[in-house]
Length: 362
Image (cartoon, rainbow, N blue to C red; front, side, top):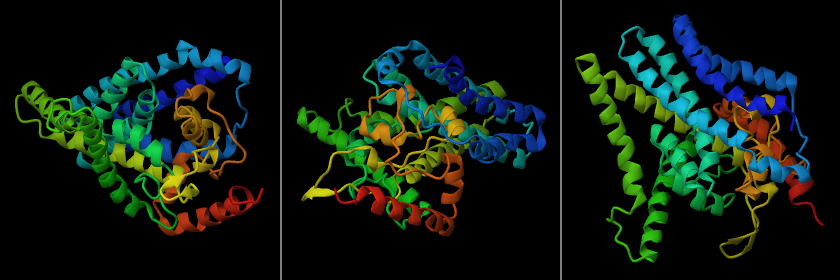
């Protein structure tokens, strides 16, 4: 892999840079990150286009073990923690009027959710304990720690079936999907964890129940952060819990928007009652748009990820046969927010792909 492509993954750090720059510019500068994510990146995706070239097979093993790519992810963990601490100090400083604070908070959520959860997702698929710990730390910051259970043990098992809350159904609008996915994913994570404990003859109320910790820790985090900054400020830092809760909601809502885009309308074939064909690159939407893939650590090559969940992000492959999104995630999320436009754009693409590829007779 060329050095320029390796360094391209550092483009994700442009988002925290935009957040900080926007704050010091002041005024509408606090909306700079939003403009960058949903304005500049879609334009760059459109003009620069896609990169469908895959890593040569003989190079895959070497690149998969190269520490540089793990280093980039680890850097993000510490930057996000530092960024959140800085953001809390900013919000109690009373330097932002209300409409600036709104832009600042939304921008922070785009950083912690757009890239932070992407990094958590990548690390959460690994068996290394440090990787898993860092994944949980990032999910802790957005109050979505149950994702660690549900995504790996639920979503990846039941993706593209009616049993998966994170699989959006054809003609289901994003807002209905958001409500369903957020609530059912959390409930299913409890179910999966309770079943794990039952197999080990451990009480559901035991301290070994990860869901108790995953639910309580983010709440404690907000309380402790509020207490700390209240002491620092010399009065109640009521702005801190509002900032933390709002950026978390924005962050995990962005995750659910990505889920909506990644799996819209695709269902695995049922080969027997409640048994489905094995997950393959047909069962997720793919996008190889170059710019947004750098920023999202190639998450958009989602077809390969679901077929081979442990494959490292730097060697994820493009498949021409997979259903292809017309643009990268930032553009597709904007379209998804307008259901009539989404259905008009995506339903014909979905049906054409099914007829031409997925349901084509052998």
